[in-house]
Amino acid sequence: MDKVVQDAFELACAARDRAYAPYSGFNVGAVIKFKNSDNLYCGSNVENAVNGVSVCAERSAISHGISLKGANPLEFVVVVTHEADQFVSPCGACRQVLFEFCEDADVPVYIFRKGGEHIKKTIGELLPMAYKVKIF
Ligand code: THU
Image 1 (tube, rainbow, N blue to C red):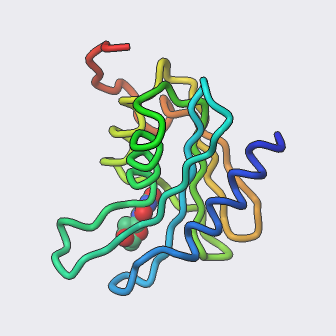
Image 2: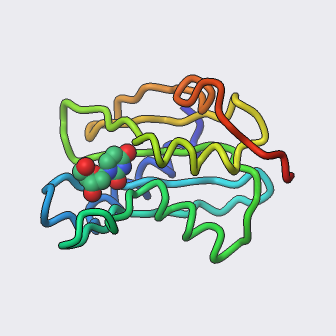
């Protein structure tokens, strides 16, 4: 695995440990990397007493990256939870939001479980026939 993906995994684990998930007890951390920057941007899931306004880790990471760097094409995404035996699969809403910032369907999404084992999927595999309006 590339060192930058390993670094992203470690940053995602730290974000996962800071998640606010008192309702589900399911902490998630995510990291995105833009193609034109060396920076890694993390996000945690942030839950709320009102179910519908909770935010997933992937969308937190996107917001974090855009707030510091602006909207740019994604190079890769990393996601991890605290479960030793579970690969956390990004929800449908997050797949759509991630795809918005992918130049093509080949952008990798590394789905980790706690110990560091991972599955590598492309955004196109996670969201086939995605709807997109070409803006960049
Ligand atoms: N969650 C994420 O943050 N990312 C995912 O990929 C799947 C689910 C969060 C949402 C909610 O706060 C908790 O996990 C349980 O569903």
